[in-house]
Image: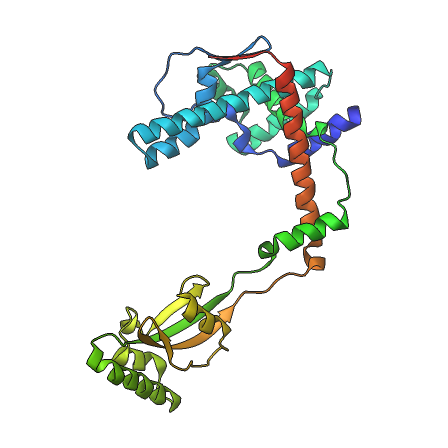
Length: 328
């Protein structure tokens, strides 16, 4: 068991950073003080409204910058409910950890404290202590909070997955999620559009104009300058330049031609919706698909993560089912 705790604690210390300072960060929020109260009881342990607000505060600030009125109030309520659920789950994990008599060695917590002082306070222990005192926390209380945070981060010790994913599952995932392994196909397009709908009498003349324009291009006229003279598309002043576009940008008829054209080729006249189009693809990239062999390792890692997440969620659900939880 000691080796297990050591292994997880070492991994945690390698990954943890200044972002894991819930107490110190909470003091920077400019939220007005709110009368505290009991938000939930979990097996006799209390979660307060102030703890919920402390957890949800950063995202609340973002919501307040984006929404107002009833929509804001609804989203704030949802956010606080999620924060409360998260705090309940954390408390269940900590209780389960302690019930199983696991322990994190003191020197791992001390090492974490040294890292916090080094990374967030420039190595100045006195400034760190004064910051705690300003927030009415003792060093012992802060250590306890850090230890609880470590315990929650280590809850994956309850997750045991198969170390190998069957080839069939990998192949099935690759087949069903083919788009994940294909880079987005893009083309750099220029376009000339000549309207064929000015009036019935001029329709033949407009088609003749489109043929004349195509002839000029075939004779070596520059596409962009020709577009500036003849095109009636909104990109006329930019020489018909649509820039880099992806599929589903153009109408299906035009897209079919554009994405199948070789780079540098000028299309024939394309009739669509009563108008005449001439396209030129100046460049293209993407559209490449990784082979199953190339993607196999990434798929295996993803499937293992999904399995681990599912096991972890089921474990948390089992803790909830056995616990006494009352929310207010």
